[in-house]
Length: 163
Image (cartoon, rainbow, N blue to C red):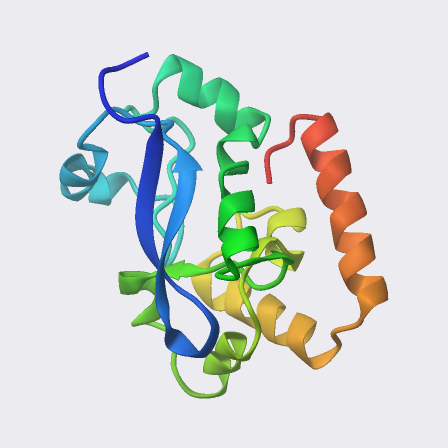
């Protein structure tokens, strides 16, 4: 564990480009954003910042992330109306700035706690592919697809595959 707040708040881009504060249980050392610039050369994803063994993640944070329990506070975002259970993942501001043209259609839906990108292996998918996956989800949206995504999410969490 490390000193600092229990919750991590991060500005994300939601429906229609509106900004909101997304909640998570804090899984990194306090001040992890300040250390991000030093680690940028170790980034393993194109457009997104992803590291398999990020040194900023705490011991408890690894457990929270492996079980996806760090995402639970987003239920408050759902109750508030900023997010839904299923939808495109809300991007941070610098990632959103890289999304242009028809890819911006992802902003027509309320972002979700889970979505197609998360159940298709979010750790390996670069930003431009994630946006394409989101676009296909938007173009083919149905309650049935959302139901299948929720089921796959539950299976990922139970297997501790992380979502």
